[in-house]
Length: 184
Image (cartoon, rainbow, N blue to C red; front, side, top):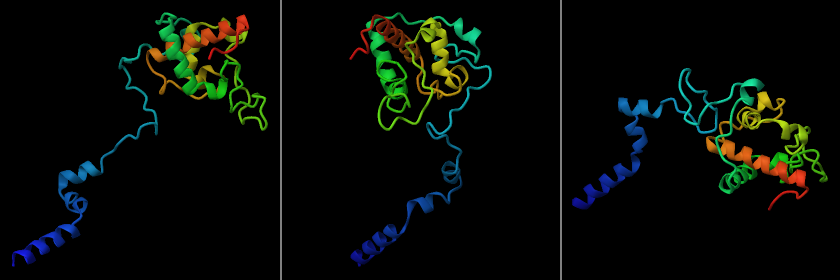
């Protein structure tokens, strides 16, 4: 008798899908059908009037960006962190030495060439004369500051990593001027 009841209880339990039962209870159903944000699916702009936790975001114009001051000293720690960020996000387009000859650039010298034309060199005189704030603003909002070709990385590169990346780009520029190439 006990075996039959136990088998019947196990069969009923096995046939019961907990999701079906739980979601018939009102407050569980609202938890299942709530609005949720998927990471990286769509960057959400900050609420108007709030203060950014990563510092001042540059406006999408050159005069505001040029006034931003680099808050990170060019130390080996900052440059090494900047190199890591550069190799993660920038190298694929701008190349190891910053000349705009990354693997997906059309000017990479490979056969077949990459699909993207117009990848800027970061080590030419024009970019070297720009302020640290300008480079920071391009990282944050490449579509506006970077001729409309560069994707936006402000949602991926955050906080001090942005300034560390600026410091590493300055290191690449110094290496290009001295003719030493990319440091590995």
